[in-house]
Image 1 (tube, rainbow, N blue to C red):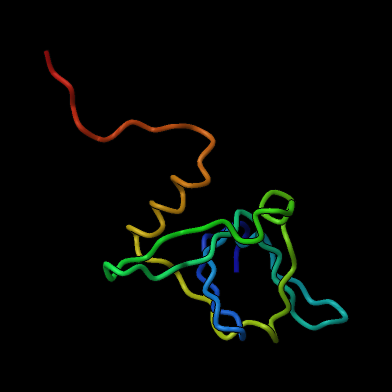
Image 2 (image 1 turned 90 degrees about the horizontal axis):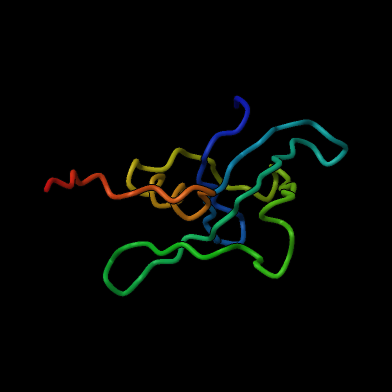
Length: 103
């Protein structure tokens, strides 16, 4: 895994996270992923997905957390629309809609 990739992780507990995967390293706990800007994927009634901050009462999102590979069921790439929604959620810069305004 190259440095800083947006990935979906399904944890052994059933939660699905979308996050910026900073690194993957081997430690005494085995392979460990370091992730930041973490959101949990929440299915909505309208058959779509919502994003909510993961442990918003902590500094996990900005400082990052480590997740052991043994606690991860799979890692995959998000579809483009979900990736764009995620990037908008964690963007430090507000971007305008892609509509052209003419006078």
